[in-house]
Image (tube, rainbow, N blue to C red; front, side, top):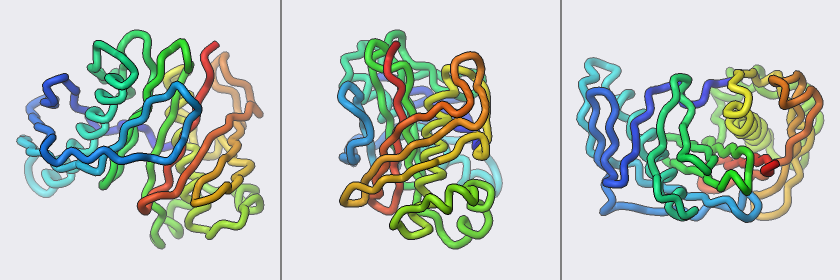
Length: 253
């Protein structure tokens, strides 16, 4: 499965200045636009999303990669900005989100969370450890023709296609992809073990109304000592603003 946070992530400070090695990013809060996402979690989870990925960036990246590096830094900084605000909403006094050696976010003591971003949106979900053991959130642009031809055969199995409800194939494929991404983000902080798209199967997608619904995703192999093969997880999805948004949560023990 795609490794979440594969690029270096900036650090978020309360002053809204994001730093990483030899890079300074300043969030343009004058254009701050908080977005309201559809409901992806039960009560007790705090979600923030923004479409403002515009920041002033100083970077030592050179050549043709500079633009790519700048965009990725903006996406990561916006995700950390959402995480910081979600932590404030949850009552956290420490809103710093660190970065582990494997690139996963390090949340302040007493909190769990998840971060997602694309070229046009960033979001984060946060909860108290007393409420959730782990969270996974994802936001994916609806697949284009190239993705449907190149990536989908590696992501969506024949059995998953056979279970497709009354949705168009592009929306369904993006839901399956995003659901597995949210599952990965939810389980990885617990087991610290990577797994691939074929290691999970979306067995049911149940549309509700207005582009939203629920899904079931099943593990096809064990993960650490915590999760057994055939274990089922429930999640929610919503299609909004050209994206599929998904969320997976595990209740606190």
